[in-house]
Length: 605
Image (cartoon, rainbow, N blue to C red; front, top):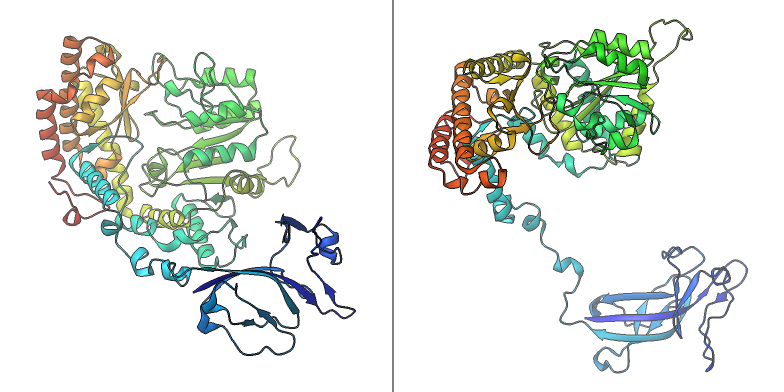
């Protein structure tokens, strides 16, 4: 193997004359003759006394009238001609110190007559003949199963499977998706880049991807019983928070006013949350002017009268409804009236209840909202993704509104998603969402949602029968919010004990809380365990486990004190927790696990 680096002066034949690029050999000053047009435009840079290269902005590919003057190549001797070159070809000579390869090497260069200027050779016998020889075979890197390709990651996934199967999952924003959804998520659709909308992509080769996205959009409208003439949907948001911010970006100018439910009242960070001290936590409170509305301190329900008063004073451009820890349904008709009265648009974030809405087991927000956003992995039981629904077509007649006025949300929202916020959509995710939406249109899904609601009621009622306080004294959806403050406990302590007992839930603020790290409640949801087939009697059993966990918390706090750092010392060694964990895991493994087969698990016990 011989690697050659050589510099050429090129005689280029043109229709008028031959121009020559040569290196002058003056002793005092060396520079190329300024005869070529590209040199005159200073398209060359000097890299050594006798070497010049094209500047980075100059295309290195040969042009019709110009042959690139610097070449670096590696070649094997059998592929090089040693015969005398015909006219118009260049002779390249190896460095004289490499005797075994000192014979002339002939390379055809078309019509250009090339004279060697400088040439040296470096032996590369120790290196592979080509870069391709050093590459892994496709079968080695591209078709090796995960267990062989990366045992470490494979083992972590298998451990997570075991945790999910042997535990009780009660986080209201989580669910177990189907094997079909997971197969779509792991499909080759992840390989394709497809910036833009169907039919207007910035990349080629999107014929199939366009069909996937169009199918997903059609199913999204059908799943939520929407008329395509009146509603459109964007299925490209990566998740719920990007969907919300894209919607705000499309509908609002920076620093325009919004109103959303306060976080301690059950709202979400992306609805404009900032702390009581004025610290802006969410980007929505940073880039937009936000004023929260709250629930009644007496009932825990949204105080619509107070909301209306605030809206008339604040005059928001957008009112946001929906929450992440609100156990009651919403009065969308009242919200629409308030929005119209103060001149605002109405956006519903139905992320938590989208499955209930699709199954028609919750009040329909589409009847009154201008825009509706959602995640797709909570009660909807799809992949982790997001959607933005928007009104389109003619607006209903309204005083002061031009006749024939049309909604203008579509282009604004689509532009906000891309290119304003995101790059290329995740096509494997969109395909998986299409699968989840198809499943959500089945009769079995409606029965599932009905069971989710019944299980939440059974869980909350059993806890209240033991004297515990649930916010709003119950639930109308998929979750209950447990107020622990009457017990003198904080949510982070109960969450910790439950974690060690193989019960997963989350600490959550309740109205009046000032700390998100040590709030006064826990949020409990029923979608995930209902997906495993649990019914009311099973959730009564779960309520008993939660009661035992709280009793353990009270005992530990009595012994260690109220400081959290004292509370958690040696908690893993607590015998009561170990006993509860064993009972919980024995209970949990009796139920089926969606998404993967137990028989294929590495850790079955």
